[in-house]
Image (cartoon, rainbow, N blue to C red; front, top):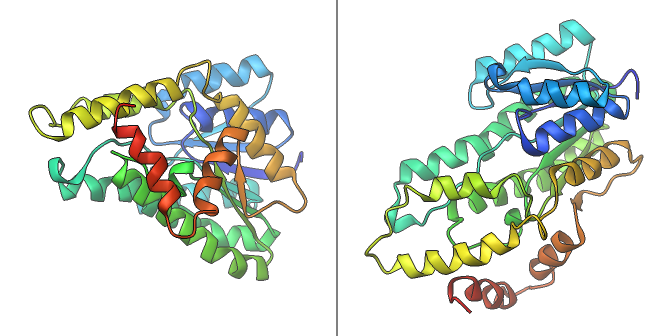
Length: 281
């Protein structure tokens, strides 16, 4: 993969950082992007430890000028693009009665429209080389989860967008894959921080949220959750796969959880499972 150019979004931490380093280790020439390159220290340090180099560039997926500038840089510097990993996104906890519609729109802007805009800008380059388009979604893009209404809505939208794009892109030589992690150790802290501003105290939602957080803390415990490095290994293996699947889960736990929905035609099983998340049992 020494001549393959890979662009990864959201590489300042977590899955994006681990993917950039793992891909470089496997031979990709990696353009590692993030909204604020002043936060590139952990990525540069991880790359140095791994003995690889990555090209750190600014990219804000909610800013069209930033997207266009980054893709223009890739074309002018490397002559083209072989693969894009849409990873940039943000967690969010909330429920609609106690949060604003503006907050929901903001979640969609980052997690859905950011993917759409970056994909649109990259497709001409990917078509030229018969490239790969890989998007990190979530099992939350398959199974709706309590207090994740906006986040799951955005991830559902990404899944629908990519599933619909897949046959169209394939007819022009671009393979499309969505990668669905389950609980990953790097993500829960951000979700809890988002929750701190959720005004549920004194409302009927307070005990439901408490029960949800107890259950979710257990799922994201280091002994149970997957590492970002584990997810990155799956992502890079998928990029290297000559015939990748359209949908890939990153762990056995993620496969089981996604299977709850994909084999649940009337939705009853999903509701049975997630109802317990807020019941405190």
